[in-house]
Length: 426
Image (cartoon, rainbow, N blue to C red):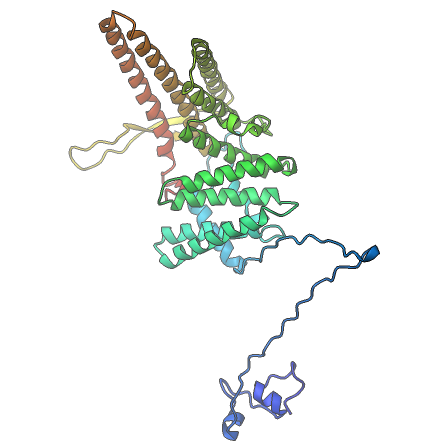
C-alpha cells in the first residue's frame, strides 16, 4: 500500500490509489505500465493563514489595534551574504598590515567592520538588504560580472522600499537603520552615474533619523564610529551646498565625541569651517565682515593648535618621506618627487583633513579680502597700485594653495599603495 499520506515516499498517483510505488524517477514504472499519469514526488503544500480576531470590549465596541508594517526576511543564504561582504570589506577597507605599529588606536576605526554582528538578527532585515545590495554591486563591478551588478541594482531598489516601510514603524531600530543608511551612501558613491544627488538624499535622510531618534541610539563604539561617518558626510554635503552643517541640522551641536581622539577633534573643526563658508556668501554690512574675519582667524588658530598637539602626542614620527621610483620611460617624471609613508591609515586620514581645513580657511579669507579690495577700488583713484598689490597677494595665495593641495594629495596617494589598497583602490 502507499502508506499514510504525508509519510509515504511514493508518487502522488500511487499514494492516491493506495498502491505500492517502485520509487522510480522521474516517473514510476507502475504508473507507466498501468497507463496512469504519474503525479511526481513533489507534495502539494497547503498554507493556513490565521488572524487574531479583535475582542469585543464592554458596550459592544471592538478594540482598535494598530497593525505594524513588517519586512520580509531577506531570502539570501547567510553564507553567500557573508562571503560577498567579506570580499567587499577586504577590497574597500583592508585591515592593518602585519608588523605595523598601530598609533593611538586599538582597532581599525571603520564602521563597516562592525556590521556583521548586527546582521541576521531580529531587527536587521533592512541592514541585511542594504549590505547585500552594496556588496553584490561592488563585487560585480570589480570582477566585471554583469549578472551580479544587475542583482545589486534590484537589491538596492528593494532596500529603499523596505526603508520606506520601516521608517513608519514605532520603536525604530536606530542603530541598524543608520548602518543601512551608510551602506546606501557607499552604494551611491560607488555606483553613481548621474552625480551625487542620491548620496545627498541619503545624507539628509540620516540627519532626519538622528534628529528624531538620537536619544534612542545606543551609546557604544559602533555608534561613535557611525556618528563620525555621518559628520564627515555632512561636511562634504555642506561644502557642496555652501551651507553650514551646524545651522542646517542643529542637533550636531549637541553630539559630542565619546572619546578625545585627534580624528574627532579635526572633524569638529571642519564642521565649524562649513559655517564660515555660508557666512562668507551672506555679508550684509561691515560688522558682518569683521565678524567673519575674526571667526576665520579663530578657527585658523584652532587648526594650528590641533596639529601641534597631534605631533606632540604621537608615539613616533607621523610619516616618513620616501623617494618615488622614477619611470623608465624617457621624458617622464613622477608627479611627486617623494611620497609619504604614514604610521597608520588613521594618521593619513587626519593629515588629509588637517590640510583640507587649512586650505578651506585660507581660501575663504583670501576670497573675502579680494572682495573687499574690489569694493574699495570702485571708490579709489589709486587702482593701479592696488592692482599690483592684489597680484602679489594672489601669487602668494596660489603658492600656498598649491602646497596645501600637494599635502592633501600625499595623503590620498598613500591609500592606493599595494599594502593598503584602501577605499576601493584595489
